[in-house]
Length: 406
Image 1 (cartoon, rainbow, N blue to C red):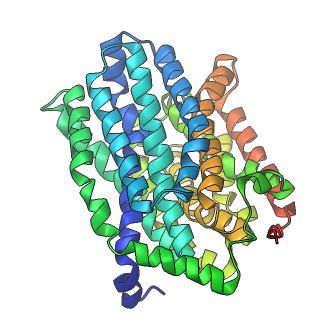
Image 2: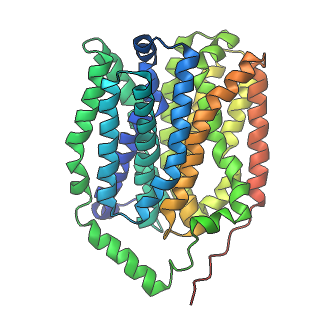
Image 3: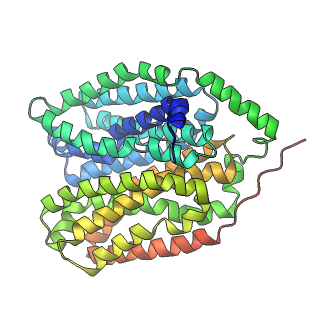
């Protein structure tokens, strides 16, 4: 259980993680897609053309993230977080002022890089690095910033559309992010002492020197055996939700039913974010890994098996349960397996794979749909992927730490 003393000691650091996870919302698909119709109208883009711009920008941001994410290992946390927040603010301002399709593409690239990529990466990396015995709990609480954004921001955006234009709204986002940047220094006040204590503890315990570098991780066969399971939620969720209109049409569901079911998604993710932390701390993330895709597997089988309207809320609830487990388990896994000395570089590669998959999924599933493949067949294929990936993850051996040079 989390005690009052835990929050008294670590509350500001956890609040920092939650704030960065919330800030990542402005670069997430769920937020940007709220402006999709207005952006397409402003730039005279078809669905396919806008999707191409979005996918290209997302994949380029994933490539950049591999380099940019590792800088958190070298730059002081507060400075890095402010750079990320101001970068996200600048790209929000650019989105509000975008005068051409290339400018739009740059804005989306920056929003995806600084938002979905680096903001979330910063918050979760900090939790994984500075917590040990209670790492899972800390990540679970900080990750609540994600569902808070998913719940609040769509309501605020829809309400704002009634009084201001979409460009003005993006400008407001940029100004708000700039205004909140000083909050980083407030939440991380005294963090230098925490960082020095971590380094001293590593030296005293002889830890850190044998932690894996990114190169060492990429040479570990176990990393590649785990990767298909870790990539599955981002790819499958993004692809199915991006094509939710077609999914609803093919099932005979009203689109309002899908929209209402997102509340259950948020509730499911909150429940498992809170519940998974203690499980990770007690059992370890690596032991949980082969089983964490069970809710996603069942969700896909529900889509495959029935057209009943009841399937929509069940499907979205199961997706939410999987999302919560995934956030917490992935946040703790790399620190547990490879140490924290090079955690930024390792997580940035994993985060880049996730971001890349979210850019690839809509196009890949769109091609399957255009080719006449049914949503039931796609769902069944996704379930098979989950089962196969879980088996691969179960065979992955826990790596030995690198031997430190003399």
